[in-house]
Image: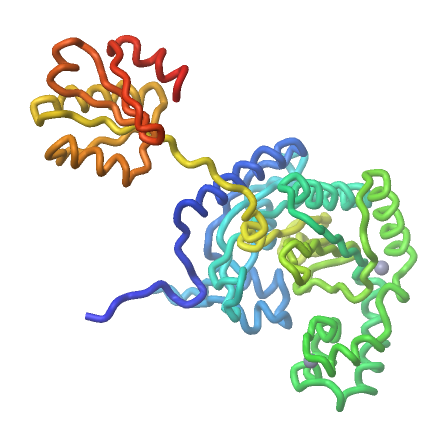
Length: 416
Ligand SMILES: [Zn+2]
Ligand SMILES: [Zn+2]
């Protein structure tokens, strides 16, 4: 029979990398509690309609990257490609907009996109992110951005760069899109076929195209930042001012448009140059119409999502502490019961303990202890059982002591 492998774009996570994942997850839980965010876990799959309406029919994500399938009752379901639409859906469904203050959520979990797999990018990937609803102040934008940067800094990720833009609102975007379309049409022949299609459907997406001719055209297209309405301009100025209070440096990037349609006003992205080229770690922004568009009240929102695989790549410097194993060995199968009970006592005290139920000879057990990288091997043999002692071998130093069993705990406190 042929071997079954993991699907393309997925991967298994093992020790010791899994320790880094657990470290990152714990850090997220601890950090975001300080800002009164509460964790939310939404389903892995949702009605496809949620993402089509939430993310936008014309986005790459919806058009090319969704894992959409029909279940046995012929419902169209989609593995979530991101979590914001789901969190909004959950808040509407649970009536949180009327019952909860503050409306601050964070999440950690797998997302799914049919994307081209590459280093740090998978089809099943993990994100953590935050969402704040019903706060339209520019200062809350700055607080969210501060938390995003500060958290990555605390992970000691080097060379962080914050890019900031305003992508406008329903007042100023349509007139700008009109100007943008006209300008793009003037360069139509220089654009790739994808971008030519985007002129009508969603011309902002032309700024996302990585093909050099399109990038050259994009460099000459009019910018939304020059066409913001008064409200968007004021909001953006206040965000920048609050960021300066918080001592968060940023770079204005007028070509930063996020890949999802729901963003309004503030948009931002954080990259790191730690691994050479700038790597995007996290992106987000304000979405003032999404909640209403998904059938909720007319309330605003802001949030971000961070790619955990990318962040893990940047945490290579965090070496997890190897387990200091206590290996319990016994000189004869007759002493197995004693060994089992000693292991129980030690685990109760919090020590990681291994013993070999098949232990044929002490020599073989010592070999196993070596292969398990045990710190100490505790031996129960005839002499020890008779005298109520235990022999402890320090595996690194190759030294052995014999002590009364009842002193073992005190000995370990001193020497472990
Ligand atoms: Zn505006
Ligand atoms: Zn293009």
